[in-house]
Picture 1 (tube, rainbow over the protein chains, first blue to last red):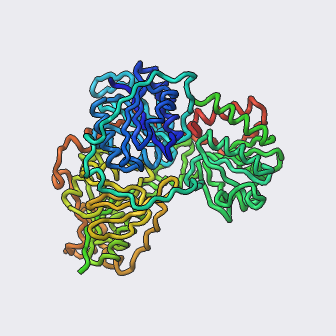
Picture 2: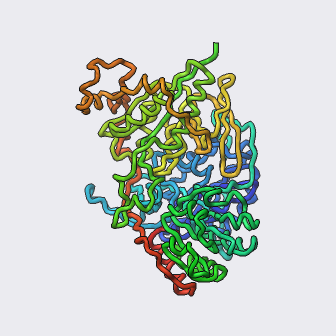
Length: 339
Length: 291
C-alpha cells in the first residue's frame, strides 16, 4: 500500500513522546502524499495502547504482542520490522532517534538495502531532478539534518530505494492529537512464525533504569539561568523553553548554590565547559567564572534587565529585559513560527 | 590454558568538528575545513581501550585496527599501534569513494569476513556524521548479533561475552554469543596513552603507498620489516559485488548542503518587546540554529 509506518516505542507500558511526535509529523506528510499513516507496535501487553495511537491519526496498527518481547532486544524487533516492511512496502518509515531507534533502524535499513538518515531535524516532501541520469523524481522525502558537528545542514534523499527511512530526536517535532480518533484497523502479527530461537541469542541479565541522566555537554542548545532567575519555580520557565527548542537547562554557580538547580547542571570554571550551537543566558550577569565555561558557544543570546551586565558584551544578541516576560515570548514565538 | 580471541577495532579518521569555535569559521561564515585537524574518532578510541583490556585479560589475544579512508588514514592505524594494537589494515580504493553508511558497512563487513575475528568493536558514532549506523549495519551484513552503547566489556565466560550497556535512562547487562559486533559509548573509559615501547617498535610502520609517495623517507633503511608494513586492501582483496561499493552502493544522496552562516561578532542589542523577540526567533529558525 506504500504508506508511512511509524515505529512506536514504549517504556513501562506507555508510548514515548517521540513516537507521538512522529505520528503527528507523519499525518502531515501523508496528507501531501495522499497515503495513510500506520503504526508498528512491538511489546508485551501493548494492544491496550491502540486507542492512543488512533488518536494520533494511524489508520492501521501492526501489533506484535508476545511475552518474550517485554524488553527491547535488537534481533527480534529487527526480524519483525524487516518482515513487516517486506510485506507492506511502506514508502516512508520513521523511528525515534533514541537508544532503541538508533539501534534498530540501521539494522533494518541494512537488511532492506534502503537508505537511512539519522537525527533529522526537519522532514519535507519535495521533488528532485537527477541531471546525470535525466530522471525526475516526485514526492521524495527530504531528510534534513545538521552534520559536521552542526556546522552544515544537509538535505538527504533516497531516490531509488524504499522505504525512505529516518530517525528524529525527541522534542524536535510537534505533538498534536486529533480531536477525534482515526478509524483504525488492527493487524495482529503472528510472532511465532516470524521469530526463531536465534533471535534470542542475546539475553538481558540485568537492567536498571534510572532517572534521566542530565547531559548538558552533549546538548547543542542550552538555556542557562543565573541567580537573577530568582527561584526554583522560575527555573521551570527555562525548562519549558529548553524543552520546546530540544535543548537542556544549565545554571551558573550562583543559581546552583541558591538551590535553584542541580549541581549536575552547573556551567563554568567549577562546573562543566560547554560549546553548544546556541547558548541562552537568562538572569546571568556574566562573571568570568561562568563565561569561562560557555564563551566558545557558537551563538550566545543574553537576557538581563541590567543593560550594564557584562554578559551582554559577550552575547551575539543582547536582550535588555525581564526574563519572566522574554522567555514566554520566545516560547510563544517559536511555537508559532516553527514548522 | 586461557582462551585467546581475535578482535577487530573499526576506527575512522575524522575532522575534529568539536573544536569548531568562532575562529574555525571563514569570513563568509562557512566552515574552514582546512583549519580542522584530522583525528582518531573519539569513541573509536574508547572502543580501542575495550579491545586492549580484553587483550590484557586474555593474554595472547590479538587486536587489529580496521579503517577505511584515503591514504593518510594510515595515521590512525599508527596511533592505535602506539597504544597497544598488534596490527592494522587500511581499506582504500577509489571504488569506495562516495560511500554512505550502507556502502561503508558493506566494505567493512567484507574485510571482516576475510579477517574472521571473534569480536568486532567500534565506537558508537563518528563526530563528523553522528549517525551511529555503521556498527549495526556491519553486524546485519555479517548476520552477527549487535550490542550497542557498551560501557564495559565485563568478561567472556563459557563462550559468551558479557557487556554492560549505557542507555538513555539506565544500564543493561547483556550476554551474547560470538562473533558479535559491539559499539562503545563515550562514557566508557578513555584510551590509555601511547606506550614508549610500542612507539619505538612501530614508529616506522607505513603502507606501501606511503613508502612510495614520501620522498623524505629516503634516509630510512631500504628494507622494511614485515611487521612494519600496514596492509592496504582494495575491492580486489576483499571481493564482493562492485555495485555495492561507493556511490553506486549508497541509497542516500545528498541533495543540498547549506553552511550555517554565523553572525559577525558584534553584540546586537534588542528590546524585550514582542516584535523584537519574534524577529529574533524567526532569524534563528531560518538560520537553522533552532528548529
